[in-house]
Image (cartoon, rainbow, N blue to C red; front, side, top):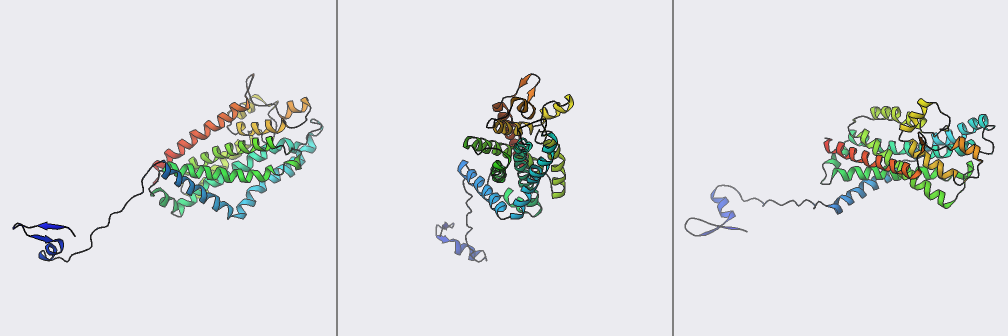
Length: 308
């Protein structure tokens, strides 16, 4: 116990001083140590948030099934119906083969957006506030959320990937790995977009209404459900400015590269994306999607830094 010296030079303890002042000696205050901040600390926060997203999805089997229902219906019901109408114009090609890359995109996009929407749910129940007051970077929380949503969406896409043989797509290892990488890239970008939307929203109804308003036009204008060849100029312009077009087209290019298709049919079903007379390379399309994902991630982090 610390000692103090009075005016006569005598040493007195804190207890003696307290007694002289008429107060009972109390416990000494205990110091609180906050964990050191740094890259390792933020990486651990990213891991925790990512792990939580994975557990939340794995434990919600109803959500897993419902996210797969819509693309499966589009692929096998709508694809079969539309295929009966266009089979004469594209002989030798199953129309479901054409729709397959688009349905992969639909799966990862819908799942990624729903994963991002859980932020609104966390805000309603107070869990988000607990995360925001934690001694970790808010950027780490956003990165963990986007990575978790991207992994969950990619996992859902793998289920559609496993159905490739049912629509005439070969299980070539190089094709599967290419599609897997492109799925993750698209899933990360769309999750970052969803997190940006959800960062300032306070109820699920508003988020899902806005999500439907944004996602459905992007889906229809991406070439996921109809070929991009021969479109009117106004519709072609909308597909070119649609970011999702650059996520769907690389997947279709990869699929058709492993098919034996007549040049006439490929010109109709897989014309690529053109800026005037310039055909956009797949590498540039992937770069655009990656750049958009990075920008959206930065915007989402900025939104969270202002969130209360």
